[in-house]
Image 1 (cartoon, rainbow, N blue to C red):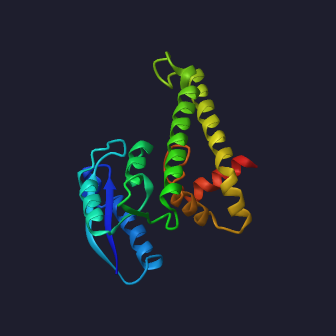
Image 2: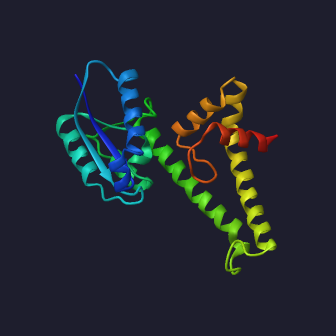
Image 3: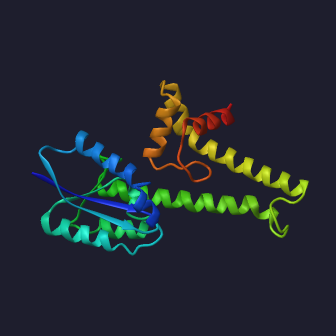
Length: 217
């Protein structure tokens, strides 16, 4: 019988207490188990860390990995960034030969593919951070981004530049989906499941997909 160990990570105690963020991870894991998992299967245990994605101190993850290596069970995680946002941390986990790991939203990805995806995601975050700093550089020394018409115009121009740049970057994914007849909601769901963020680093919704398409016209 296939055995699984569920692992969750939320960023704040309030999220853990309220279920915000946790419910979405539970939904994705349950969807994997009902759709992709070999039957019969059983869940041995569940572990939840309340830590920032930049904090690699994960006591509950260590417990999950120890149990997985002891029993041969597979650790099941909703998304790759629930492990960490640092590719070095993810890489170290992937190198543990006795550890079996499955990402629910990437059900067919092997360890090598997950490693590559983690590296690409980290590069994208670094690029977005650099681009944001460069776009806002002309506003440094003004005291505030607002305050007078000139500063407001420069801030708006920087925001538009960021949005246009990001729209161009995701268009290679969005446009084929639109041409294939996918709805705005379906496109948003695909981007979210792939770990792609909006220009502001948030989740995709039909309205944000519509705005990106409008910028490409």
